[in-house]
Length: 185
Image 1 (cartoon, rainbow, N blue to C red):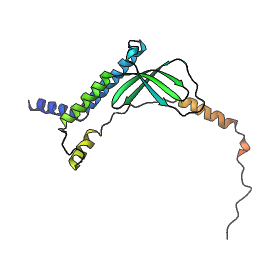
Image 2 (tube, rainbow, N blue to C red):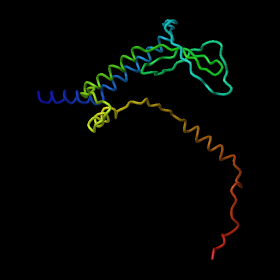
Image 3 (cartoon, rainbow, N blue to C red):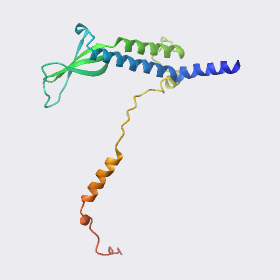
Image 4 (spheres, rainbow, N blue to C red):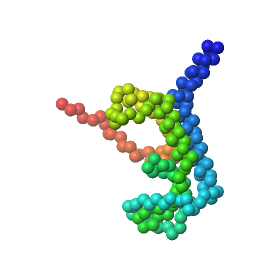
């Protein structure tokens, strides 16, 4: 009985340390993937689109007259948006976006859960940081899931390219000294 309760308490501790971040990260990624599938199938209302204009000061931009399908995520004022389409006119990038309500709800739930498990309550003097609150904040947010992108290189192809380059070099590229260099006295 003691072993089971110890294992259960250890599982709860591990979940509170990092497991909830993994869970909410999974839910966040799933919400984005579901939204992209919904947008790809055109299951959205054109009237619900929000237009965002961004100034672009780039030379030689190509203007487009129609909107192109575009996948991106934007976080603006704490709200996550998924871009549906884009258009470049003159020096402005025009994005049509939909708010991702599920993703926003998951992020709010994650923040509330983190506050609850760490007993972080707002105080009247919340702008003053004590050493204890900095320690708690450091422990809570040390584990930050960043997406890892892997790229596998074709090392055999790179090696063959290198061998081809060295084989084409003439043998007399490197000059040899005619004798021993002079000694400095």
